[in-house]
Amino acid sequence: MFHGWYGSPWYGTGGYAFPWGGLIMGILVVAIIAGAIVFIARGGRNRMDDRRDATQRGIDILIERFARGEIDGETFKKMKAQIEEKS
Image (cartoon, rainbow, N blue to C red):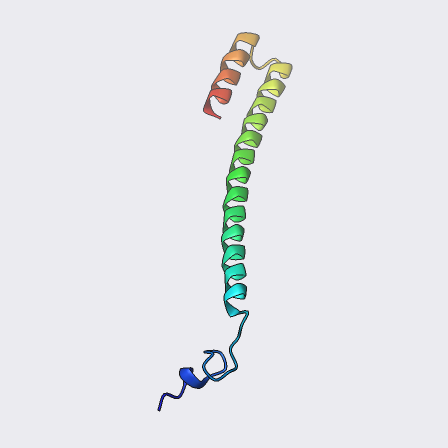
């Protein structure tokens, strides 16, 4: 009477149950969740590294301008404080 899913070896009523299906699915779900957590964590860390790199580049440009004599010491300190404040 009930053919299809009920008599298939994957469903488990015909004596051919797939005994490790639940364990494999559990491991797969945990792996997917762990992968998502790692992906999100790496993304956040990369954004922080980018911001740190941008801050350092700005300070390097200020140092070069100060070394060439384009800005004085007081201007250098003010601009450096502004750059560090934004990061």
